[in-house]
Amino acid sequence: MARSLGYTHRMANQPPSRVRTVSSNSEWDIYVVRPTPAKKWLGTVEAADVDAAIAEAAWRFDVKEPNTLFAVRRR
Image 1 (cartoon, rainbow, N blue to C red):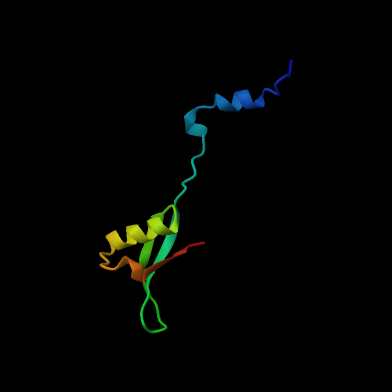
Image 2: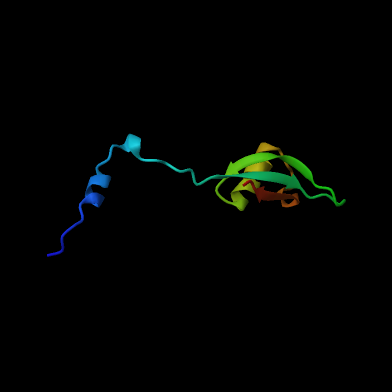
């Protein structure tokens, strides 16, 4: 019979307040693609991935054509 190390069992019984939660969302800078080489910064949104960031930005900044947006993850 295999003997358990014991520490995994004790860790599972920790109170929920001590469990550290990490957000899966990242911050994304949103830009509008323009015909000139310059790009225009619209703002920052929080989303899980690039598609969700663009969808959130289109809704938040009232952009009629979301295909003109691009997102860059903030580091």
